[in-house]
Length: 172
Ligand SMILES: [Cu+2]
Image 1 (cartoon, rainbow, N blue to C red):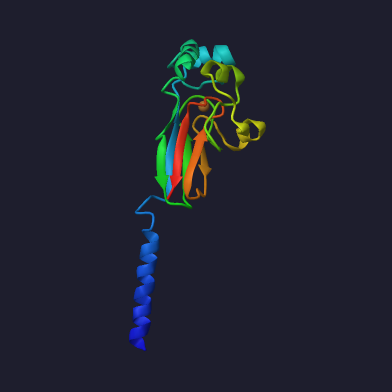
Image 2: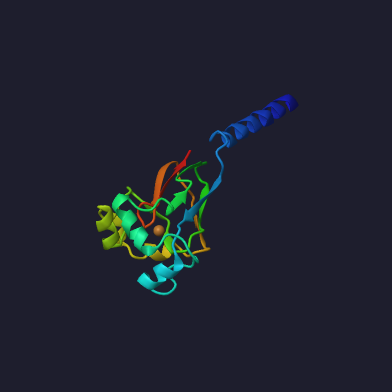
């Protein structure tokens, strides 16, 4: 009897180990940085005070020019691909100088700012119909947003203002 209890315990331990490693060691948590390179003086002049908290960087005029080639690469989510154990969570940290959103979308597309979409040649994602997403998925400079639990499969996140800021998070 004792042996059977012990072997049951051993079996239970083995099963728990197998469950714990079922995601092949994928982490339970990932951090994704939201980055930009906005130039405070020119952005605040064009968009209003507080638009950009960085002292210098890419001028507003040069960001506008970059839209014709898909947007400035320094506006990005990093990493843009992340894998984690299903049920885990992601923290998006805004290390840029502008307000961004880290919004899950069914499919990547344009954001919710028509002039930016026009310059990029993109159509707004359907998620723009819900303006509350700017509050619930928006991240101020220096702020962060916790997202989860992440179910298995691919989840697409993009900024609703700068739609070339994108990341795919995959739960495994
Ligand atoms: Cu953004």
